Structure formats: C-alpha cells, structure tokens
Length: 152
Image (tube, rainbow, N blue to C red; front, side):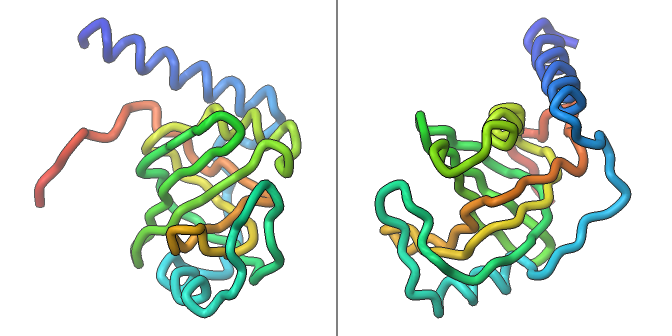
C-alpha cells in the first residue's frame, strides 16, 4: 500500500469516527426511500421551483438512497452526485439552512459512501434536478476509495 493510499484510508477512518461522534449509527439496518433517482428527475422536470439565493423554495419532499459519486463543496454550498440503480441526481445543501450537525456530517462524506437523503426537489438555475437536503443519513462508509475509472 502506498503512502497516499495509507493516508486516504486513515482520513476515511477519521471521518467514520466523526460519524460516530455525531451520534449516527455506523451501519444502520434500513432507510425508507420514497423515490428512485429517475423518479426524482421526473419530478424536477415538472417542478416550477427554481433555487435562487440561499432560500430553498417549496417543492415535493422525497427520500432517496444511493452511492455518492462526486462531492463538490463550494464554501457555504455543498453539492454531490448520488447514484442508484436507476440513475443519478444532484444533492445540495446551503450552510445557512442546514443544521450544524448535518453540515458537519456533509464535510465527512466521501466519494463511494452510501447515504440516505431527505429533502425538497428543485431545479438549479442550470436546470439540474436537485434534492436540497433537510436530512442526511449515513448508511455505509466507503473505507477504500472507488477506482478512478472502471470498464465493464
């Protein structure tokens, strides 16, 4: 194992410990999902709610679950791509509207982690279907990073 891989593993183990310190069950037995990623995308197409500023507009409330494929923090904003067996959707959070515990959890989410997400379906200014989070439940921590690219 290279030094880089050892550092990555240590970092992910520290984040797993943070999950525990925040009071989350490390590998919960279940999560009730109301919609798949493709169903959320369909809801977003019909939605008139568009995110502007730091206020989350009213919209359909959903719960989805899947693997985090990308994480994109941008200061007070946090975005990630969640993928399930039906497709991909974007998750989003705004520091001002997220409670402190959830915001800390978001900083400990890595590519490959499996999460359950609850929130409001909106479209971003670019038309991206997004679930703006009201709750995030960590379901499984990926201690090993996903491969950069895979074929198959």
